[in-house]
Amino acid sequence: MLEIAYLRAHPDEVKARLAKKHFPELHLVDEILTADEKRRQIQKQLDNNLAEQNKLAKEIGELFKQGRRQEAEERKSATAQLKEQSRQLEQQLTEVEQEQQNLLVRLPNLPHRLVPEGRSAEDNLVVKQHGKLPELPQGAKPHWELAEQYGLFSLELGVKITGAGFPVYMGKGARLQRALVAFFLDRALEAGYREVVPPYLVNSATAFGTGQLPDKEGQMYHVTEDDFYLIPTAEVPVTNIVRDDILDEKSLPLKFVAYSPCFRREAGSYGKDVRGLNRVHQFEKVEIVQIAHPDKSYDTLDEMVTHVEQLLQALELPYRIVRLCGGDMSFASALTYDFEVYSAAQQRWLEVSSVSNFETFQSNRMKTRFRDENKKIRLVHTLNGSALALPRIVAALLENHQTPEGIRIPAALQPYSGFQIITGNTP
Image (spheres, rainbow, N blue to C red):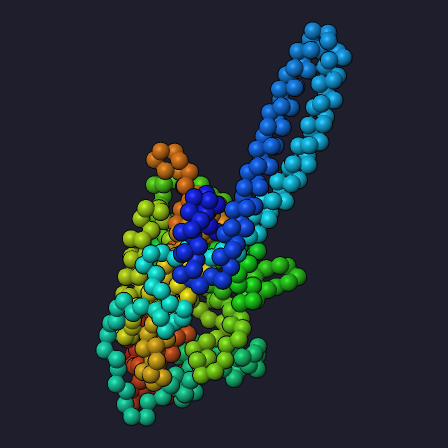
């Protein structure tokens, strides 16, 4: 959530930066400022009213001491009127504060100056590409055909058990999943992250804190009886660990890593892009989260980008890094780098990670602050990234490392998988 003081001081700049995200409701800025002016006027009246009540209370006490009872009773009558006025003003203040809050939560985060212009993924800026694109043998197959050939996962079984988009991993497919999770977690621990096992269901306050509500209700599974949401990513519960906290500046940055299943409705997804593991409703992911000092958060972002790069290099996957344009960014992000791996059999790039800086957007919602060396209370910056999401990593590993003899496992992953190659339809 944007800070009202910043909107008040820089309304034209806010509109210009929101326009870069192609936000269609720029009029909300003016409506928020109108509500804010009304709120401040009511607050001023209320403060004056309370000050007058305090003044009268002192006068009443003195009058009673002096035996001037009639004058004291007159003052008490005036105090009663002021109290009723205060009650009405407090009610008006609550209403206008709620109105302002309802408007504020509809504004997305402001894009950083590095965010390129553009409306869609086609306008994203490729900032780096690494690795040679593999040349596959004749007759190479996409990952869904390889999965059937080697018995690695079944989408049909998922349909039988649950519905479309819920794969069932089996045999070496299941072991590969477990190996990737352990590999990603170990690399994060080596980089100084603290491991967390979070709940996979969260309440609405938690979902609001990281920006899933009220923006993404339609993308989350909702347990209506308990009003819980299945997490779309571990970012949601992990970032909320520090909700409502005032942190010590010396404790920053806080670095968390968590493995979790993720649940996304992906409403409206269809077509060739959803074949196999390209887009599913349940998947596994290792997420890294940092709670950073606002003066150092973009150095932190670069550090997290490097961490994801090293994972992809270890998996021997060609990748590229793209800086998302304004029109392709998430609601809460100030700057996002996407990682895409090349799928040789599909001959297309697949997004496998997003690494983002949210600046104070999430921390303002969560009221997560720190006390600096001057004892001033300030909002922290929050960042997160996939390190990594498994489905498309598995897809790229199967497709890019297929050989006539079988599917080769990268050397860095072999100690975790327990096998060097996938051959035959075996456990």
